[in-house]
Length: 193
Image 1 (tube, rainbow, N blue to C red):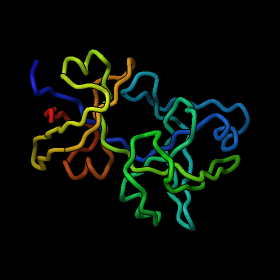
Image 2: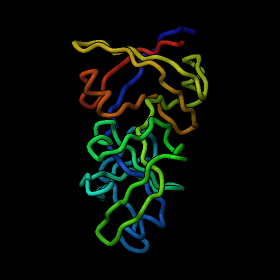
Image 3: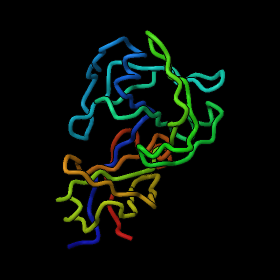
Image 4: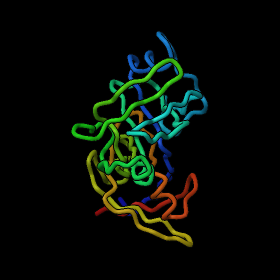
């Protein structure tokens, strides 16, 4: 088993996850999300539908929804987005929203008020059990990933998230992608801590 392994790194832009109840409020009762294009994780997709995210008097328009519907709604932003909206939210793993700022989400048929749920997503690796075993990591492992190129950088404190349906990909936000000169995708080298 090697301590080094290549991994596809993808830049994930700002997006919203919605539960069905909130989707109904924003787009009308019984609305189903329409696929704009599939994304790398099985069964997940960027949607045709977009929303506005409002905090105070500031609004980010055209924020893409990522489907399918979830158990709860949340907003994932970059640090630059958060500062533009005038908030200083925390870096969190998706789904870990307790104590985070809220926002108003605007749709064509209504609006919802999230009391909490605005996060900056923690850089992470999606791994199936087989891929994790091959790489010598497990769920919750913290690793580093090195990216070569003109703006070479090593991302530290990358958290491994394991699930049977996951594909071996790392996700970073747009600020992290810009720092490393990555527009959409790149290849990195996993370094076990």
